Image 1: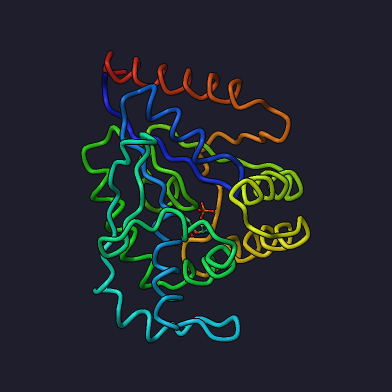
Image 2 (image 1 turned 180 degrees about the vertical axis):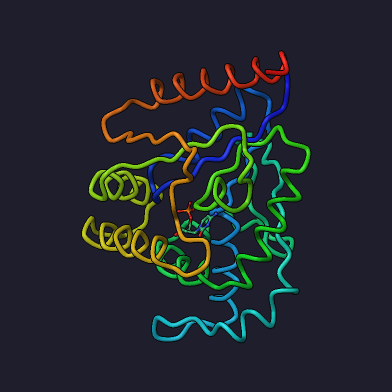
Amino acid sequence: MEKITIAIDGYSSTGKSTLARQLAKALGFIYVDTGAMYRAVTLFALQNNFVHKGKVNQGALVKLLPKIHLDFRLNKETGNSDMYLNGENVEKPIRSLEVSSYVSKVAAIEEVRYKLVEMQRKMGKAKGIVMDGRDIGTVVFPDAELKIFMTATPEIRANRRYKELLEKGEKVTFKEVLRNVQERDHLDTHREFSPLLKAEDAIEFDNGDMGLEEQFERIYHYALRIIEAQKKGA
Ligand code: DC
């Protein structure tokens, strides 16, 4: 199979990771969840008490950035890649509402973005990758052969997230989750460095009332068409 780069960007809880994982599996490509990387750096900031009264101590975090080692390792039970922070599996704590509440602030720090974007470009050097995030089609891989931008209303997205958190046993209210989704939307789209933005050549998907299967089929066919065209050297 010819290798291409697939960039999936969009708002939080639009099902980017589900789609990216399905595509990677069907195409035999590597899947990288860049949100997990920003979440792991946020967890590191929390563990080191760099968060006080809703504010992140940027200077302290930036100073310790060289001490943050991130890698993805295959979880044989789930078949997915788990996020490791300095050798420890952090897949569960990085999905908590506490990390979600601060991650957009951490992701707005220029030095943090610089470090993670470098790592992401290295991971995608050999192509054959599906990467999801907020700046993949605009900053990380502006030359990606296929770019998807996913949207859905804040209420639909908060409802998805709320159900996920309840299933994991977190005690949250729908209102809290909706507020978190809206706050993150605002921070992600208004930050100075690489804000969430649809790349000009990205295909926009509002999946508010589209089933996961239909969405996957449509995008998978786009990918196959591009791969075919590459093979023919078109
Ligand atoms: O995809 P997610 O919800 O797990 O991402 C968590 C946060 O990380 C999100 O609020 C925005 C930020 N993020 C980012 O700024 N750039 C990326 N490439 C991926 C995530």
